[in-house]
Amino acid sequence: MKELSRSFGKYFEILSPRDRRLMFEKLTEIDEATGEFCRMLYRERYQDKKDPDRRVDNWLWKAVYLPGVYKKRKMLGKAISNEVKGTLRDLHLENPDELSETEKNILYHEYRNVAKRYLSTCSGANYGSKLLGLKKASAEEKKKKACEDIWMASRGFALASGEEKRLSLWCDAFHDELMEYYPAGKRFIEEFESSFTKKGKK
Amino acid sequence: MNNLKGNNLIKSNAIWIVFIIEVIIFAIASGGTFITGSNIVNIARQVSYYGIASIGMTFVILIAGIDLSIGSIITLVNVVCAFLMVNGGMNMWIAVLAALVMATLIGVLNGAMVASIGIPALIATFATQTIFEGVAYLISGGRPIAGFDSNFGLFGRWSIGPVPICAIIMILCFAIGSFILNKTYFGRYFYAIGGNEEAAELSGIRVNRVKYLIYALSGLFAGLAGIVLLSRSGSAQSTVGKGLEFDVITCVVLGGVSVNGGVGRMSGVVAGVLIIGSLTNGMILMDVSEYTQMVVKGIVLAIAVGIDCLSKKRQTV
Image 1 (spheres, rainbow over the protein chains, first blue to last red):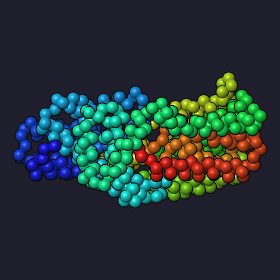
Image 2 (image 1 turned 90 degrees about the horizontal axis):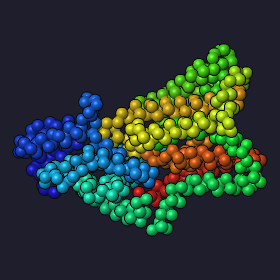
Image 3 (image 1 turned 180 degrees about the vertical axis):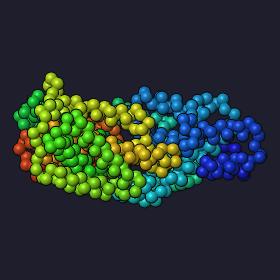
Image 4 (image 1 turned 45 degrees about the vertical axis):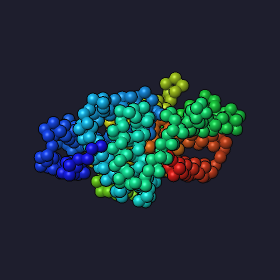
């Protein structure tokens, strides 16, 4: 993916929606079309259509929810196609070939921001705890679980749904962000991939 | 490829295979008594109340919580409902409604302690277990309460054809539980909170509100189980629910709901309930003492949790 200018790149580094909005208002170097695309993505990601005052992150919800879909894939059967359709629509990936290079680039960085925000929650005290929350996870266990969650929300979901091609931008962004967060996680990712191949889809 | 599919099929239905093996063993050991129609109806009656209670427990364990108070809720609902009907002269339906509202409110109290105050679920619900067990004793004075309306047998003793109404209530409850888990956004929230609570909160889920609702539902289902049990036994005892929470937890964990939260399905819990119900019934038929039954159930719980922990260690998605 194309490198972004320093200040525009910083916009995708910030995790707080409010700070991102403030930062975006100060950006001057992006053209009108790019700015409009970013604003649209911001609205779609952080706005609750039913209750505009409510703070949501609709794309982070995908990262939280898709591992659950992956785990229940055998039970969902054909119902998984509805989940896939909704996800592709929400993430602007129904026809990725129709996206311009700039749009693809912005989406990639926005997806990385989603993964970054998810990973920021993976070091909390309760993350990965076991036995009804009584046994806290070690730092290494938390990182392994983070790898598992990120893989299931991206590549795992893509493999299970057979949509590897259309979801490749989402998968690449999540993978790249994970590798930046935990480079040693590569071995876990390889393990998950080979485990999926051995087990088969169903 | 076919071998692979076969292995996966066995793995995903292992719990049902265990159930079938158990039935075959008891059928042979009892000389066929275990699989007679009357005994199957008997098992359906026996499993109905902890089957109903296990639905609420499933929700709670899915968010990596626990509800130890359900045994006491069952006891208190027994005592309060019977007290209102016998000593208060209250109409059966109003007494049932009042008892269910009370059970739900106890669940809300559990939710408040866990979600708002931040007391670990194990401690919070252990406290309410002790409190409401005491309250049940205080109301009943430790004596059984009996002599209520014969129509009250509807929930636990009556049948439609050969099918006990309590089993129908349980099946309806399982259908509702399954619908909530698989078809509603609310059900998705359970898995999300159990998987990563902080991320779920950031994505817009009102985690505390969901926790309140889950504990309230756990209380409600336990209350309903209490009504069924009271109807079946015909008298309220202040010790009736003692230790029931462990049977319920065993059913849920045996059914594949992970004690780490975020993993599990209702069909597995149905199998767990049937396994524990058949085990209890089979042991009674084999004339196994009550204390030996406790030992066996304890071992089953330990094995179920052990398998869950080991599978998590070895798991590669």
